[in-house]
Length: 305
Image (tube, rainbow, N blue to C red):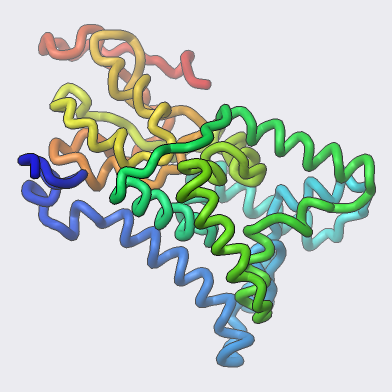
């Protein structure tokens, strides 16, 4: 076995196991906690939240609606209720603040399934399999909306695994486990990170929101990077790291601006050098010549995408 026997080993040795898994644990607590709030009503008659991820009412006061589903409804020619519009507006505002694809990493129940498949695939060194372009999910998203417009039906919601799994768990539909198994096997043996990383239209939609979101991950201490590559190994969208991390010596700032970033923070967890941290997209400054000791800062906000 090599000296570095597993990803994040240096972070565990340097910062301790809990610190090296902090954000992963927080994500799982949030995901399971959200699911628990929805299940508390039908299972324990404690109705803190009524509904599901599609549309819900919290404490009989706060309406929340999935904006992508509302968009499908509008494309299908349906008239949206004012509560649905308000709920979607609240959700959009939230994700514009914290990061669009935070939905994928902190909320979506499918993430637990695909992360498990990814971990097993790496553990047993399985091949990556079919890897479609990451732009494929944008085409799928467009097709979903066009289908709704042409047919007048939100046809995707009959197939959407997020909707099926969440409604199935809340309302006790037995076939939900068939969907879970299908997604698990697809990501395990057909296409590594195939669903979340390449095909999911909801991920594509929240990625569009993420382009404009305020909260970002920043490689603030990138000069300390020792090229261990652990951040790339754990990142579900590793292509987003390169511009921010490898921009030292250029005018490229350290903030990860790509909408593909899920803000999952695993790069923060596994970095023994504490290169990464949460920051705001506007704090995207880089030294004119990193590493030369000068304090002159050059704004790179104009390069934000």
